[in-house]
Each structure stands twice: as C-alpha cells, then as structure tokens.
Length: 239
Ligand SMILES: [Zn+2]
Image 1: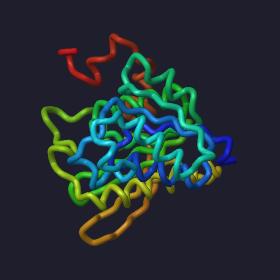
Image 2 (image 1 turned 90 degrees about the horizontal axis):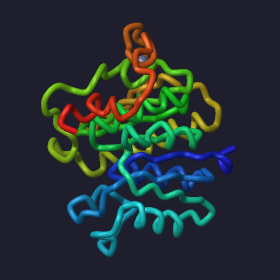
Image 3 (image 1 turned 180 degrees about the horizontal axis):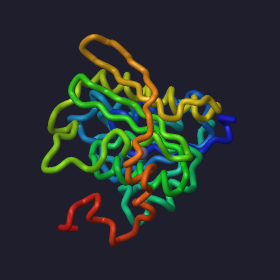
C-alpha cells in the first residue's frame, strides 16, 4: 500500500526533484530525502521543487517545504548528508525502496552496493546531454547496476555538471524513474527493467536485462560488506 510505503530519495537534484514530486503526489506515505548540497541559482531550471527564494538554502529544507505544500499528507524524513560508506547500509535498510538520482558515479555505485547488501530494491536514474536511463533492481539482487556498469569509470568520466544536461531531459527521466518505483511498490514484476530515453528522437525503450554471471555484486558476490576500509572503492585512495 502506497500510503504505508517508505521511499528514500538519494540526490535531490534534477532527477530527484521530479521523482520526489511524483511519488508524493502518487500517495507514497513517507519520503526520506538525502542530499548534502545547497540550492544553486544555476540549477533552478531543472530542479523543479526550488524557486529563486530558495537559493542558498539547504536542498533538503527547501524540498521538504515544497513537498509539504504540494502533498501535505506525505511525511518527510530529512537526511542532510551525503550517502557515505559509513552510513549507506544502515540508511537504506530503513526504507522499502530507494530512488537514486545522484550526479556522481561514487554515490551511484555506493547506493547500488548498499541496497544489495540491505536487500532493499532500488531504482537508479541518470541523464547526460540527450540520453537518459532508469533501471529497477529488485531486493534479490541481479540483474543490478553493476551488471550494466561493471565498476567506477577509470579517470575523469563527465558527470551532468561537466557534460551538461538538457533541462527538460531530467524531468522526463525523473518521471520514468518514479513510474518504475511506483510499479515496484505496487508489486509489479519490473525488477531488471531498463528504460532508456533519447531526448533527440523522444523515443523511450524498455527492456529486461539479464544478470551477468561475473557481476561482483549479484554474481560472484565478492562485494559483501561496506565499511571505512572500503572507501577507496568509491572515492579512490586519497580519502
Ligand atoms: Zn549484478
């Protein structure tokens, strides 16, 4: 039942804003919001929960205020922190589903690993330039994010701030992501579904992934825990 569901939104940015808005309006009972950033004027065109008056405010404060006004019945849990190896498993374990729309690979892989360990289903989403994806991963593991993207990219792969993302793209992809999340909450069998959106042709494609036997997360299961020793896996040896 949606009113009893607890969903954690990791990253309240271009994707997290429309996803959270859709989930709140669809009757999800509790939304956890996780982000450590402030509202920036250069992002307002795609972060649709925020207004000029919110610039400089913590995203979580501004998002909670906006969602409370739009969907007063939704209960908001505020997590003003970055998802880190030290808090990830404990945090995602407290929710029925995670919606991940962060803007960096470290957080994406960390959320994927934490959810697999906690057996919490997760819907990932990403949008760069004119290309968007959403992927639903069930509580049993594969097919998962690491089946699709084996590991963190070598060197400096561009994120959406660097490569650029077209404002309306994230609105569409965030809505597709919320759609997959609601299907999971409603008990539909969508685990392993990958939805891609081409913003130049407006073509949406939907297919089922196959699990990869050599996947470190759901195949060989060589990733079995996350602690401070494992931080290098996400952030490199410098931290
Ligand atoms: Zn996998």
